Image (tube, rainbow, N blue to C red):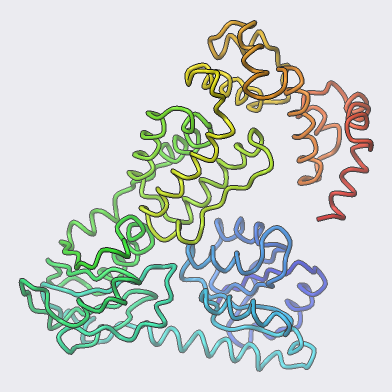
Length: 466
């Protein structure tokens, strides 16, 4: 039974769609539903799903972003778009990202449910038939060498014709994995037109793999899929036109090694969330080295910096830091983007009248304030924590941050309260305690003094604006 997950922000449309479609007729079963992309990703992280059907225009995360994330994180999940006909440009973008079909909501109004599911079912069967391993290869008719072209996950490999090696076509064995396992001869030059076509090098990596022997082709493909998902990002460089030579044993050992343990991920989260990497050169070099060693996938990198930037935004206001499309293509480009980001953040954090050491202490104090706004925060305690005198911290704090210590604490509490009111449904008394106020009544009075409205009114207006 194919497991189906539905994402649609309109609850009535979602429920109607689920109840009306003849799922059983096509061997499908709806296992879950969500009203937005973020909730969908949360579900997918804990449950097995085969087919995702998603609306495009949704709050918090669009269907386009959801499809992009699913393609990177869960490449085995099929995606289908549920949309109105006027979203044609978005539909095209979704199909480019890997969606196999789209359902116009007008089709549902015209009693074409069976036709719609039949079309999707047929498309999935077609895709599966073209990913099947050929019987002669499954029987082990491979040589000690293999030639592979592995497309970059962010490139449009559809524009590339079947690569050739000495006149023999490589075949796409999995999305983005083109492979020749039989008839490969070892030559010093590497030979074959597929090793010379510039478009192949611009859109992926050509690899000669030794030591294949009688290895099960499915295992070879699995190793290459894991390499593509995690390691190609760190090796690919559009300017380098070369064939990469790999031993199969080394390649397999590399992809099977757990580079990013939970401990490593937690270390990366803490080190990048703190802005000390902007201030301290040694800390920056260590962060970069640890990040490279961890070999996170591009999706994991995005998630890491999304979490980190959420911390930065509480300190450096009015900015959202997202990697450019170019930065997401390779480690080299990503590193250049982070270098530029560091320079941009440094213009806000550094004040020429203070040394790097003093500046570091001040921003450590700021991070201490934001670490837990529910507690009582005093200048004396924070000064002791960052190892600087209370009077000197008071002076430096105002000069570097632009507000006195107490003014900054009050504003930080108020900003955090606004965010909790807008982004959560937690009761106001809970928000009061989380932002350091002794009770809801006092919190509401201070909040109205600062904003001109009660917390409940602010929440209502924030929801309407969203």
